Length: 354
Image (tube, rainbow, N blue to C red; front, side, top):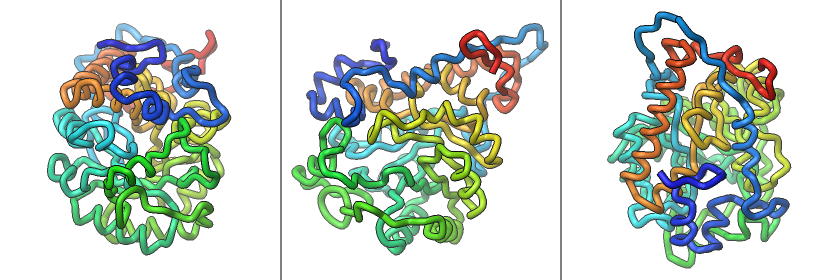
């Protein structure tokens, strides 16, 4: 599969097909970053090296995981992104079909154009991702809609759910404006484009607690995305969140956020529930490293978008199935029979044990 130095498949073809403005948006270049600069999230993951264990007399390897009360084929899933129909004529449906074939979880942004019921009809292994902003009645309505469509759970983005300052959109490209110009309605909007929300949402932990209770009424687990500080992980656990996603939102708002992989160990020390890594995953090996550091699941976004643009469902399936095979082989070579047996003892960093 064609790849670039920064690990994205089909990069040249994707760049040509999307054009420079949309490509810059996909790459998420913040105002304080440089175009084509190294992806720091990916770089931090790649500094780890695996320590294989030998002669363990294993007879097989089970890559399946239990996550948020559900079983998945591997500790790998596809993260959410906005404006799917701009990237592919079928929107998110080719990715949904690929994830169904592999039994991997799929997160769906409220800024997705493809209707949620259509996606869930293709594959029910979906989570609806919402922005923790606006009136709670908006969240309640979208949670109810997710339940009606058969989604598996809810994700609430709490880090930078809106852009408080004009012109700071990733790559200087407004996906909301692009959708509006095309007359495209999104899952979370009442008209064309992306639903406008207050620049400063004014949410606190009480609002998040209420959102958790709303999801629980529909028997949907709720994950919080954008947690990097251990104290915030404790607060999320105390109000009843079923899981947290360590994420700096792909460094889209600022290149100076801490990376999620830097924070995994500290978060795991404070948080006992499901912990997800979002950011910089560019291979199955990265997912194995994340599992060693305590992640229950790793989410991938940009490589999947690139594969979608270049080759549709089969390219997405080829990418993800190759990564699942990589996870299987490397975990077996590490000498474990179950993914959950991976731990920091299987890693070194800069020549030193983790």
